[in-house]
Structures are given as C-alpha cells and as structure tokens.
Length: 277
Image 1 (cartoon, rainbow, N blue to C red):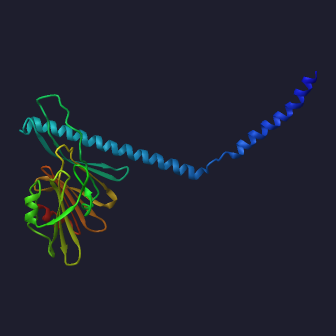
Image 2: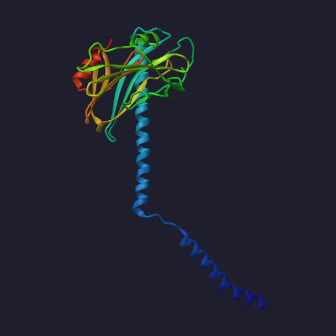
Image 3: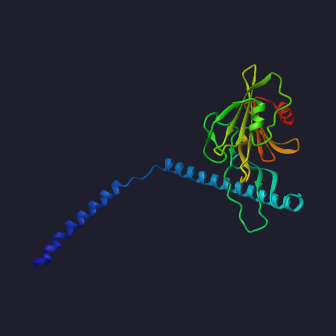
C-alpha cells in the first residue's frame, strides 16, 4: 500500500516537470516573421526558376548546333573527317528579359570509328567587356598576359589571320595592339584599341576558339538597349545599341570570334565592321 501511495504522490510532480519541459521547449522555438520568411523563400524560388531557364537555353543551343552539324555534313561538301559550321542562334527569354546568343561550332568528327568528341575546353559567356589587361583567362586554361606589338608583328604571331578595319570613324586613331599567348605558346587572343580625340575608346577583340570548342555564347539583358540580328559580310552577328549610348557588335568568322565595342551609333559600327579584312 505504501508503494501505491508513494507513486500517487510522485505522479503530480512528474506531470509538473513534464509540463515545464514542454513549456521551455515551446518558448525556445524561433518562429520567423511572416514577411521576411516569404521574401527569402520567394528569392530562392526565383533563383531556381532562372537556373532552369538558362539550362533550357543551353539545351536549345546544343540542339541547334547538332542539327547544323548534320546538315553541314550532308549538304555542305565538308571533309568527312573534319567539319565546321558557322551557325548562329538568338534565343529570347521574355519572362526574365535575357537574350542568349549562340555562335558557331568547331567539331572534329571522326567518321572512321565510334569515338566520341572530347568535351569542350573553352566556353565564353561574354558580357561586352574587353579582355582583362593583366592575367586574362586562357582558352586552354591558365593565365595569359598581354604583349604590346605592332599590327604587323601581331599578324605574324597570331594563330589566325588578324582582321583590321580599312575605314575608321572620324577622329579615331590606333592607340595600341596587344596579343595574348596561351600556356601552350600559341597566340589566340588579340586586342586593338583605338582612341578618339575626345577620349572615347574603341576596342576590337578577336579570339580563336579552341579546337575542341562547341562555340561561344553571349547573354544580354534586353533592358540594356536595342538588340538586333545583323549581317556582317555574310556572317550573322548580334548588335547591341545601348540605351546609355554606344554599341557592341559580335560575330564569328570561321573559328575566330570578333567583338567591337565603343561609343558608336549603328551606322558607324556597321560601316566599321564591314570594312574589316
């Protein structure tokens, strides 16, 4: 009987201890404020949605590249062991205001066996910026540094035929020529800078894509200005006319991507580009 009375006496004490524990745990819970928590969740959802859109654009570009390559092999009269398609595609993402532009594809296709082409070593997503003056990225990895040379020296050293404008906008003159050597000793990147008396700069960069590259792509925000698809001497190009002034033009000639940036209107920019040879 005494054991029963003892258990009955301890039961309320245990209940009280249990209630105190539950109360302490409840008070220690941190419930986030509704509005900040929702904003954080909304930001995460939007970021995930943007990633899905970018991936969709990449898949579209890859599909276009594959189709272009097949068409080139079937009808282009290309070599059976090597094929290059100078394709161009501009994909507008109206929901997030971005335009993704895909330039050409350089693929060496071995038709004698079931070999798979190696993965791309190089993929550039340009934003309109010029090459970094010191320590720029290499097409084959590593770091490259500029060498100041003359136009003639650049033509001798570069691994491609350097294009130079035959007609410059009024008031512009050549300021400097810089070339960049990759880690393997090959010069694939060049930068021609022209200077106006007013201080405005005009930059023409040219870069040879890596042999195993799947091409190059550029992403432009539609809010930056007017984006057009234009023709430069038979090659498709993208022209961006910035709202704040100036323009940028990009296109691919064989396996060399050319980009011009400066304070030029559409007429002057197109005239300059079409004079390059």
